[in-house]
Every structure is written in C-alpha cells, then in structure tokens.
Length: 273
Image 1 (cartoon, rainbow, N blue to C red):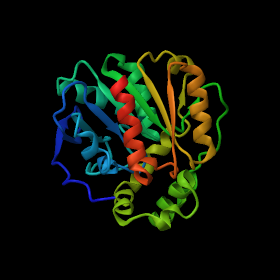
Image 2: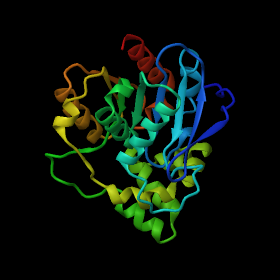
Image 3: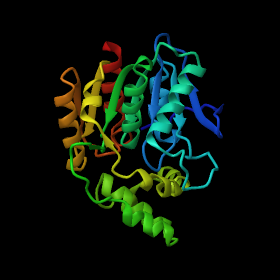
C-alpha cells in the first residue's frame, strides 16, 4: 500500500468542557463523510480512508473526547457513548452540516454512530457500522473481556494491557505483529480504558435500533472473532433495509488490513444512499 498523502492539520471545536479535535479533507459536493474510530484509537486510525474518501467527499475525522491529542486525565465522566454522540452532533451543526453526513463507525465507534443516528436522525444521511460489538438490552451481561487489561494498566503494565485487548478483538498475536504507528496510537490512548470500563456492557435497546430509517451498511471482517458477526446478524434482522458486506483477508481492523476493499464497499454504498 503506498504511503497516504500528508495528514491534514487538525482543528479544535470548543465544547462546554474542553474541545473536540478533528481533521478534515476534501471539498466534494453533497453530504460529508464522518469517520468515528473505536477503542484505543483516534483520528489517525483512518489514515487509509481520509485521503481516499476525500477524492470525492468532504471528510471529517474526529478524535473522540478524551482521546489523543486530548490531554485530559482518565477516568473521566465525559468519555461516554452518549456524550460522544452529542459532541459529534455539535460538530456537524457547528460546521453547518445541518443536512447530515454519511456516518461511519468502527467497533466502539459503531455504537457511538448508532447513538447519533437514534438521537439525531436528521444528521445521518446513511449509517455504516463496521464490526459493532455492543450488547442488546434483552441479552444477558457477559464478563468484560478487557477487565484484565484494565487491571494490568492499573498495575503499570500498559504493554501487557494493550496486547490483551488487541489480541482479543482481532486475534492472537495481533499486537506483536502490528506496525509501529498503530502501536504508538494505541499507547497514546491506553488510559482511555480506565474510562471505558465504566460503561462496559452498555446495552442498545433493540426497538431503538429498529427505528433507524436511513440507509444502513453492516460491514465485517471475514476473519473477525465470531461475536461481531452475531451483532450484525441481529442488526440485519432489526433493520431489513440494511445491506451487508464482508471484507476478505481481514479481521476486526478491516479498514487497515484490506483498505481497498473496505473503501470500495463504503464508497459504493454511499453513492447509492
């Protein structure tokens, strides 16, 4: 994969407490694309998507509040799904995107994206959920898979914490094989787990998910752990208008492992939404 174009400078949107850091690129006509990253990430996660999508769309890629380069300490109450969704609604309105955006969320970011679509449907022209992992409210709670990672983090073993988390969501030995820039990003955001665990197993109400009316794309890695496919199965049943795509040769980090296939699938969906 060739090196992406130079990262655009980042901006800060003032919020009632602190600010929201984001990058933007592209000047395409029509609704913009809003990229929402998942756990241990920030806007740098979308390094293969921002330049590709910016060829035809205006692209907004925020770092969720509490994530790099935000310097606030953790744990923090503002690091929460509904708070992130409100921040992103504020961003779209502040940038005069009142007609909405094509919203794309990965992993934990998919729950943020869904929350935005539920709470501010007028701001979502389409919704892409990439490997969502959330629990539905009518399902029993399960053990928090990253509780051990949080304990390791609290004990001063940040590297062990990151290895446990990343290998669980993407497969054994993933952390060891990861490229340097991704490891640096995850290290920069490791402390966010101290806040994230406060919302562990936060459920989604099936009836609220079923109420989403915009076009929906469910996208998963062909080699992702099985739990992610079960989430998409349930969403597909709740949202019969949704489309579904699997990205070959990729697990949970599908947009990094096979960016050409991921970008093509998302852009084709957006074009028809």
